[in-house]
Image (tube, rainbow, N blue to C red; front, side):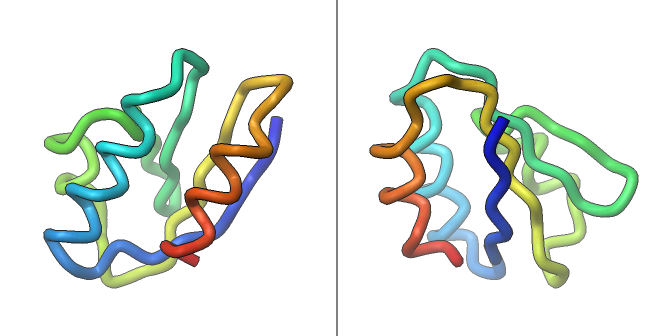
Length: 74
C-alpha cells in the first residue's frame, strides 16, 4: 500500500482526480479523518470535507505511474 496526501478544494480538481483514478484497476481509497470513500466515486468525494488535506491509499503493486499523475494534486 502507498499513501499520498492531496488537496481537492476545487470542483474541477475533483473531476480531474476521478478521471485519473478511474483509469486504474487497483483499489484506491480516499480518507478524510474517520471517513473513507472510493477514490473513483465523485459523489463519495464530495461527501468529504474538502477544505482539509485528504489521504489517498493505493492498493497496487505497480503504482509508480499513478503516483506521478497524483503529484499535481499534492
